[in-house]
Image 1 (cartoon, rainbow, N blue to C red):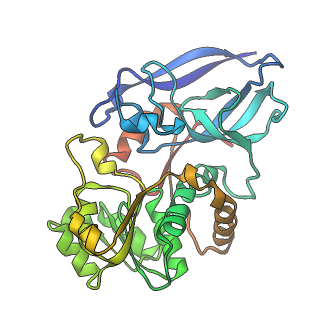
Image 2: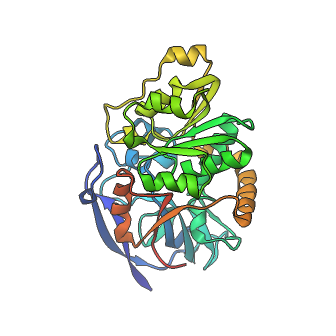
Length: 346
């Protein structure tokens, strides 16, 4: 049997803000068979993650491309891999059988031929939507959990600021921090997002950064006694303002710097005197470095989902052809929560 596999690629490297015209929908015949000695697995893709960091993979050069396999550069014309959920169609690998549900690195396409050694594992959906494996129970959730608890080590009652707080990671950081007993304020880019943070997700307060002209003064208003923990998803001016408002021994977890991805000239420049004399810890991190807390994260998050203490916020588009617009929308602030594309029905 043979199918037509549609997949997304880039026409050329993208060295500025991405546009839908930078992408191309291609198709190729895919025989649904594998030789038993190859250990190949063919997966029908169900959900794929759409993440800002992927833009750095699509550039002609980014220092991140040599840091970790997940961030390796993409060659124009070739498929693009991403974290996602699928179902095994054909397996030449004894670890997988037909119809197994799997999560791992699959392609922005209808099907993926997964080679030996590529991240792929079976999972139990635990009665939860399969899309949760891509977001709240996937790397977005682990990033939020590890960044807050492993990197920042909060204490009850501490003051926490989260930028891009309605995004896939930020909304979870705020929810985890509130459940732990912290005071939490988030920034977002619209009144709708601010309302979500305060009314649905339980943030103590939130503000629309687009309505503020002086971010340092804004944060002073929300944190008159200073910030203990800043979870940084955006970099640039917001990071500078947060550091200026940190307390002594404050901690900054640098998860992402999305404001810098599309503008090579934009860089964060926190006052290093503040960093030194306030003894501020600033640490970049990747979720892959914190797999030691994965089981703890998974158990606690599943328990909190079952009790309704934590909410999964998803923004789901449908079809391979919607991937370019979904990706470009990340940089316009279109998404609320975790951006996912549903390739096929469960």
